[in-house]
Amino acid sequence: MKTESPLAKLLFSVIRMEVTAPNYSGVGTAFVFSQNWKEGHAPFLVTAAHTVENAQHGRLFFTRSKEDKPVVGEYVCLELDEFGKGWKKHPRPELDLAVLPLAPLVAQMQEKGSTVYNTALDESLLPGPAPDTGVDAVEEVMVAGFSAEIQDRLHLFPLVQKGVTANPFDVDFAKAPKFLVQLPICSGLAGSPVLVTRTFHQPTPQGLATATQIVLLGMLTDVAVRQERSAAVFGPIPPLPAPGRADATWFPVGLAVKSSAISEVIGEFLKSIEAVQAPEPASK
Image 1: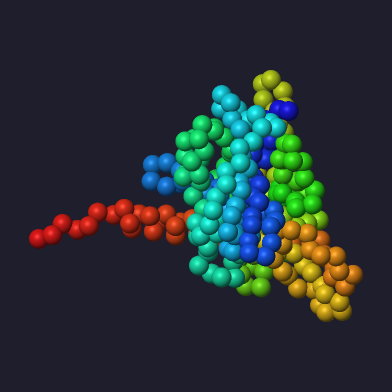
Image 2: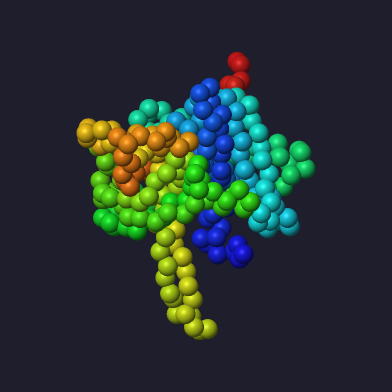
């Protein structure tokens, strides 16, 4: 497998999670987002808060690295107790979003002799500020995440789904920084990045060159569900297959948090670190 293309690299930014809570065990999705900080970058895992908030134990799966390249089919599993306690939620409870610093996790694996390969989405992939976001009223989108039902346990690549935005991205859904997507949704996909990918052909002296643009619109959190004869409502995408019910219908419509909220919560986290690290004023 060629792993150098932009879309192939993107797959290695998506991380499989297995979570154990008091009343269930299931699968979730996280992805790596790197934010500019001081003179460098601060990488974080990003996921849906509802997937991890009650988790007593977590397992994170990373592709093993050799000579700075991914070894497809070999992975490192990092197990963490009290998994739900380390995540920082967005201060607005209606935004189902949580982040976790990645660097300490990588250090833990390195201490045990394991080197892992992952890529990261970053601030250069965010849409422009409103009203000129650069996102059209209807866009084709791609979601990459780990299904609790359909999976390749040998290679641990995320499942890729394609669809479209179901409302104009520039208009906040229900007055919150959220938007709708229309695509197939299954359990485990909460925390999946929602992306626009555009391919361009550019003339060069050697002929046509292909370039790929990636835009991170946000993160998938909810699915539209209708119970019996009631109206459809959005509910959190569960980390495990729901019990079969003839009166429950999942619609192929998902709710996603905008990527601006990801940058916000990471920014708040980094500010809290800076406050702790700030030197105390000299006494007179």
